[in-house]
Each structure stands twice: as C-alpha cells, then as structure tokens.
Picture 1 (cartoon, rainbow, N blue to C red):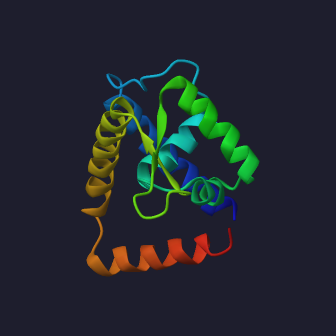
Picture 2 (picture 1 turned 120 degrees about the horizontal axis):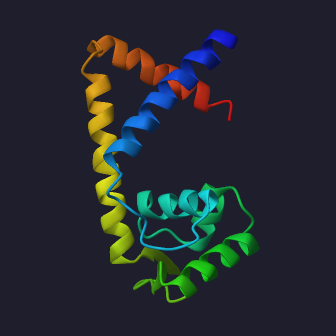
Length: 140
C-alpha cells in the first residue's frame, strides 16, 4: 500500500501544481470560501439543476445541513433556486453566472491536463484504468 499511496500522491501533486499554475489568473468570485464550500459549489456545477435532497446525498450531509449550506450560498448570491415547472413543491439549485464561468474555465484546464495524461496511454490501458477506478470507488 505504501507504494500505491506514494504513486497516488506523486501524481496528485503534479496534477494540482499544473492546474494551479494554469489557473493563476482564475479566482473564485467570492471572498472567504472554504475548501468545503468549493467542494459544495463544485457539486452544484457538475450536477446542474439538482434538488436540495439530491445535493444532500451527493455532499454526504443531512438535509438540514444542506439547507444551511444552500441558504448561506443564497445570501452570498452564489446560488439561487428555481421552481420546477412540473411540480411547484420542487426547487432546483443553480449557480450564478460568475461561478458558472469560473467553473467552465477551471474544468477546461483540468480537461486539458487529463487529455495530456490520457494521450500517453494506449486505449486498453485507459479501459483498464477506468475499471480500476470503478473498483476503488466501489469501496467508498
């Protein structure tokens, strides 16, 4: 396990260093954002239009905890709720346009880094790596 952990951290450090270098001009458009906040906002970006219950499940927080998080984001102007057109009891969570732009640029940088890494692998190695990721994800 020591070798696997060492290899993981080595790759992680290089990916993060490359991403931070390329994102040096990018700044999340809000002050005092914690790493947890960034994680929650990232969930909202990747799962556009999710409900509060879906957010709670993905973020691994209670529904009251999710309500607290989203209410705080709403007060910052980072997130807003839109009422479902089919069920008036349901609200979907959306990021504001500044955050959407920030995450689009950030994900483009991340995609470029991953594309660069993927190009050094053969198609069967990519498939094998995907299978390994799924296997590891299954234990979490």
